Length: 467
Image (tube, rainbow, N blue to C red):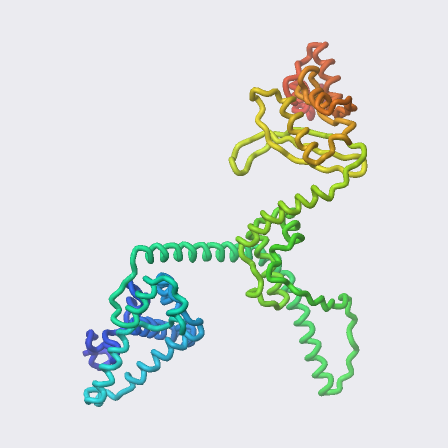
């Protein structure tokens, strides 16, 4: 007995928690459907009753609770390769099963021991032991595998069959697929979160405009009611633009212009996939009609980039007389996380310049650097069909370019079979002259791009006034 309230507290037992027509009380264990067979009516009913009870504080509807239960039923049918009905009809079946059991539980307690009530109870218990049927109407004609058909017949009758090793393999594949879909959804949500701060400004402007419009409407109503003369205030804002209607195709991520813009702006595929939904939502459209997956953006970027490169290659107008300019830089390979030499080769005239390619090469091999540079440049010239148009060479004055035996300039002339104009970079020509002066005066030998005398002068430049 509870002394504070004066009421007798009854001890909870299994019998007191039991549900008439269902069995033991509904617990958290009923929230998950398990087993190696298709779910029975009893499993589905108890799972639905659990979420129905848990969903009351959250104001979930019956259809929403049925969808939660259906998500647990579908994997069992997918394991067995059994086609199922639509989601709407399946949820209606779950709700109908609950309503049928609810009529049984509505029997008064004093009448539950009567013969008619016991007969209804026995029929309900027998029905709960059967398989919950959400297979398609013509399921026998849709199933081609004999083992799957035999498994379905067993589920319809004695429920003796169970899933085998092959079904467990299919279940594992389906689980990995669902994890991949969830990963893509999380990536899309993160990308949308990055875009959201940029779109909040436009929302704020729209809210301000709507607030001003509503306040002006209110003032108009007051003026019309009380007939108070009102002089309109001067507005310094520009007229609001109405915008333009637009049709967004479902494969907008595969548009060449979108792919080209995303590549030039250095957007990741996830960021590229996040922009269209944000624009569609701001315009009041339905994002479910558009493909916004990360994988779609990634595949379209890979395929369309190659197609656009081929189109640029075929549409380039070759100049009659052109110069070839090459230079190598040490760059980081993001895939291998190592540094490598990259050779930039460009061809053009005074009006247009085209980069032919940026191939990588490894210096210090059996071949000399000049031969490697000349060979890579010649391959690009041949692939773009512009060997006959080259009349000039632009380069820096390193030994690999200007050597008199096997340098890149010498090799290119020998390969083309004609003399070419040498146009060394004026900055590097100045370095050659300055190096000769330094060597003759024994000031400092040129070993790198840094000179000790200049670096020391730069470091002490601020104190030069005291000299």
